[in-house]
Structures are given as C-alpha cells and as structure tokens.
Length: 236
Figure 1 (cartoon, rainbow, N blue to C red):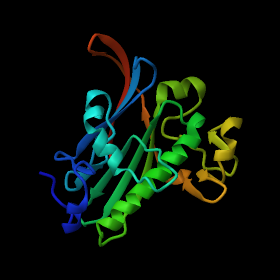
Figure 2 (figure 1 turned 30 degrees about the vertical axis):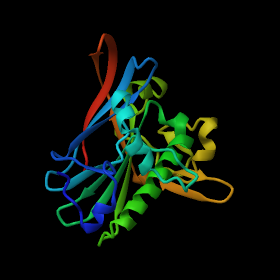
Figure 3 (figure 1 turned 90 degrees about the vertical axis):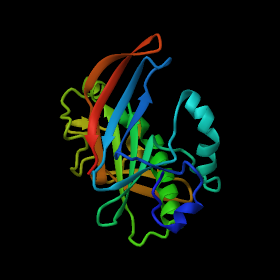
Figure 4 (figure 1 turned 45 degrees about the vertical axis):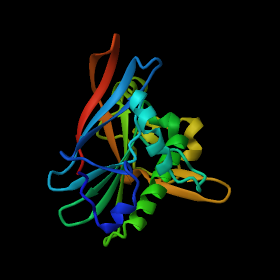
C-alpha cells in the first residue's frame, strides 16, 4: 500500500505518485529502431527516505494498460507538454521534499531544446503537486542528464566523464570543445533556457547533475539481441 504523505494525498489519482518500497527504480531509453540499443539507469535512493515515482511513463503493453493513468495526470492547460524520462519525489528523514527530474539522452548537445521543454514541463507539474499536497517545507529541485558515454567519447575524445560542462565564461559545452552552432541559442551564461515570445525559464548548468552511462553489455529481449548502455547511480 502506498503510504500517504498527508491527507491531501488522497486527492491524487491512482498512479500519480507510486511508492518505491525498496527506494529503487530504473529508467531506460531506446536509442535506435527497432530498439537494438538502449540506455538503462538503475537508481537507488537513501534508505531512510520515503520515495515516490511520479506519473511513470512506460512502454509496450504496460503503456497501453496505463495510458489513461498517464495522460489523465498531465496538465492540459499549459502549453509545454513534453515530459522527462523520470520524476521522483523524495521525502527525506527530516521531512524535506526533493523532486528529482531525470532525462536520458544519447547525445545531449543536439537536444537542448527538447531538454529545456522537458525540464520546464516537469517543473510545472512538480510545483502543482507540491501546492496540492500542502507540503510544510518548500520543495527542492534537482535536475539530471544521463548520457551515453561511449557516444560522447566518440564525438569528444578529450572529455572526462566527471567534467561534463565547462564552467568558464567561454560559451563551450565540453572542455576545449566549441558549442555546436545548432545549440548556441540554447546556451546562455551557463544555462539551458526555455523561452518563447512571452515566457522564459533558465536551468543553471552548475545545478544539473550529469550521469555517464559507460558500461556496455549485450542482452536478449524476446528473440532480439540488443546492446545495453547502463550505469548504477545512488541519488543523494
């Protein structure tokens, strides 16, 4: 049974916040059609925290069964409807709520626009949940980008996996590598920016946690062999 955060929790539809009994979960992202490669990120949270998966997005038959739950949970009255791979709500031992917003991308520099929309959509959905639950403490927000380290190293051979973003004043994405022209407009003052003619919101690079997925193994899905890029990550 999902433990309620408070009495307001009962206003949420089934599946909006799914309790993670062992404080563990995973995310995956298909890289090629027909899903011959994919990224998988195994997550573990602090054992003394209470953790929830927010509006799980699933694939295959499970997606068909849960379609009503997923779509009914999204905010239909906002213009940004993109959704990230995973949103988790952690209630720490000292009752601090933390929203963890995670997106997996094979090669993030080519998809800043998409990432900005996914982060903004997640932020708005989380703020709505925070308000609805009448949380006593203002929630913290943490953003993560998981990336295929093999592909990243092919395109940027000099990259070190623990230094993904360049924090200097020079507009560069990786140390010593100029930002591709196609994404220059999405990079301003060390930020990923969402903007339209009427609204903008920035996500500071220094606050984005980067998760390389460096390990490779071959797996079998049915009769199809796939290459899996994976990693284990402890959320703190």
